[in-house]
Image (cartoon, rainbow, N blue to C red):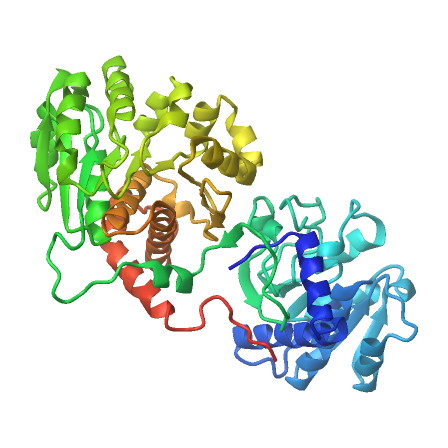
Length: 527
């Protein structure tokens, strides 16, 4: 699903008008779609009290249209107008003809009538500014938002985006009104998916409002379940383990013996046919005690638990037997291990492993000490840094990475000519050609050690089954976060551990496949 800036959305609307779908028709569709989204979420709006905050522009016009349809759904609707020209406003006239209560902020200087409505309403529909916010929010508008924020028990629904949220950057005004649900019109705006703004969105619904044309030329997309369902590899009934690919996992050190298991089982749980664990000889017995479904390639050591150049030589000789490779989880950063990683990068053939490879965790930390090698990574690779690792790779601060996540991910993928997965809330998957997919999931349950190892294995397991690196990364990120969502719905946010994800990945695949047969995120069809 395409993600747009405010300027791109204006262009889309202009093109739609030129193709025969004028602005007034889009407004009618938008208002109806918002009312339908509220009805679907509530089950029934009959008897519910809805306060519609109506601003001066098209967002306010959409709110007035929504108010009529909410009344048709037997809700008790009050419209509260701020900064809106009332002369010859056809949507306001239609609202008045319905007999709906209309209040005016310029006739309510102490906001007493607004408070009376807010104290008893079930829903507040925020149709104040939309993409039109340009200046700091202050004065009467700030006071109106404060009243809405204090409405006890009311569900806040944002029309297109919460008032005070920048549609392009995700920055928020101090007065920004956090929503329980945001109904994005036509396309989600970029700011809805970038933090801190994403934290004000609540549940995101995207409504089809009947835009004409093919849409904007944007390289930014939002991951959706139907898209991922279409990418997941087929599982033919006459398959054997070779059909689903062979993964070689190079991981682990004396102090980090859990990472090899988590990575290997991540690959297996997304359907890889064979997983081999390559780890230092001295920790092989430890890992083998828990990894029963894998085969093993014990590697020579520079010292106990530490891989060096001799291990690289053995690894390079074994690559032809595998479709994909994961390097890095739990390897450590011993000088000999840095040499091991550098030799792999220098000597790996362009076509081996044939389906690409994943560089994660300590493989990235090792490369951060030799940044010139990042532009010489051979073959088709997926790099999976978290913000701290990305900061080291780019020689910048974590705060800089976090504040410019989209720009950083796109720039790194282009510079390194590889797919980059910048992990975190709303993980970004960036391709060398500038495409970026945003995974619209922020789950605190994933903020625990080892979950990144599972993700690296999952991406490798999907690579082994024939997906290209960009598709494998998008699918792996989606399945990984969906597995966490399934678990937190059952158990709550606290206490999830990385190993819990492994048994849930097949459930995430099944749920995604089922969602691919339904309407997906486009929850509100064109009226």
